[in-house]
Length: 283
Image (cartoon, rainbow, N blue to C red):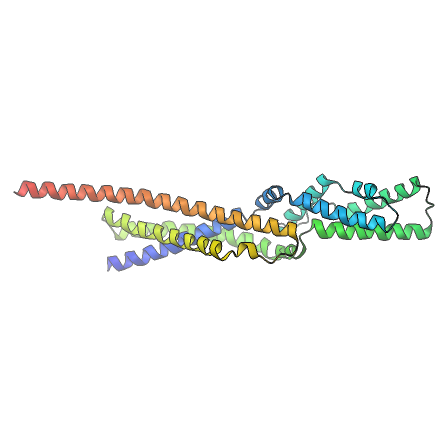
């Protein structure tokens, strides 16, 4: 009966430990804005966005009488990066933390008007309408590229998911410790305790390893359906980072299992040595 309960507890510990590891990885990666910002830097996403916006602005300028040099000068790479970071923060916050997209429209209009005046163009009502239209067009393009397209809709999921994952982490961690304590209560023999803990750790490592191998063999990450090239590189980079964290967690569990195995063998050697000494003394 004790053996059956111990096997059941080992399975439960393995499940809780795997759940804890998966939730912990999700919490420090996908649900962490700093993690996304790191990969924005790593993949030069902000620079790619700036290049795309610049190309569009030059196209607008050519059809409106503004030079490519002037339209390129409207773009501020540092501001684009800051606005992207603000958009990332907005994905994880109920309150809008203030990307300067709205201010961009006014600044663009002022620059367009100033350049037109410098070139001797008279600012009539029709000219103002054209300049306003061009400023609105620039703002729409800027907003489209600085934002994350359809990914911005994920904020509806990310915000509640954060609190759910935090609660699930506490529950799975507490359950893991409780179940380990039950193993210690049921099995008074230290060697058997080690054995069942090894089963639990091994099960968790196998699940993580199988998942990583499956994703790598199938190439699922590289086939994520994201149309924009820059956004695709960012998403793939983030997904690969998640795999790295899962691998690290699996290595930690494997190392813990290795320590338990070493203690188990040491315990077994002591038992064998004691048995041999008892046999010799009886002779």
